[in-house]
Image (tube, rainbow, N blue to C red):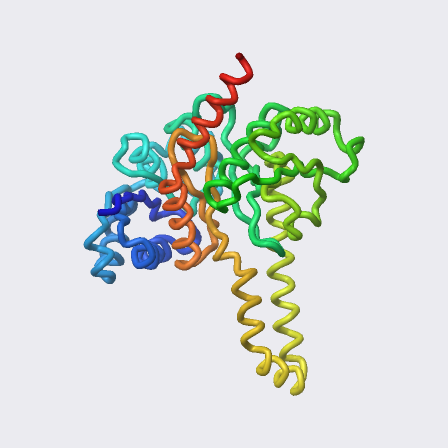
Length: 342
């Protein structure tokens, strides 16, 4: 029998929680039948919702919590005052080995701060990063850091590159991933001194991946590399920009197709092509970012997503568990350290 994975869900995090979380868990249950759920939230709200999905109720348990981490709460305040919250207790269930992973659509800063405090970092990792998959013309690329570390030193970016390469092999199935360092130009002499220092170190790690060198913003959607590395400040702004452009493009296209009778007729004829395009750029399909570098699996869902998007975030957690991403990171870093000290 396949192993049963238990996923802890922060049912109170997200713009449409808890209905979105419960419905998303039911979608995920159908996709991943060997998954059980611990649903942390207000039982008065979550209980009736869960009873609407009888098959989900058979593989899920509501753990009552009264406190909620507000979307605008400062991470430091959330850590001090939120130790009985749905977010804290869901993360803690992973630390206690009652769950294999935690998924939350709640406050990103609070989720990272709590996860670092409760789960700790993996051996050899100084800071965890938020890593996500972005659609490209080729397929998908791993992009990190998406906002966990506003300021990063050279050693942090080097760790991000190593973890990103491991994640690309595990999740994307790329045997020897290519890694790019986001910069203001491709030329070796461009960018800050720290970036050039990082590039020199990454070139020496060619036994782990192929270091492509510097990449620019337009390389992200082209898919020039399998992994793109940057600091959390740049990464978060870039991700939000990509999401905004995608939404604006969809809106422009929708308006154009309604602008005249001929446009409407053309839209009807090209309906299947537009449907395919919509599915390709649908942010819900790419929802779910992993906190790589933690001693436990934590996945952040977009706060404004719906049930389908949340189900995809659960899918990210299941993939990370089944691919043994954390175990691979520990093994790879141990091998690197032993090689460097030999």
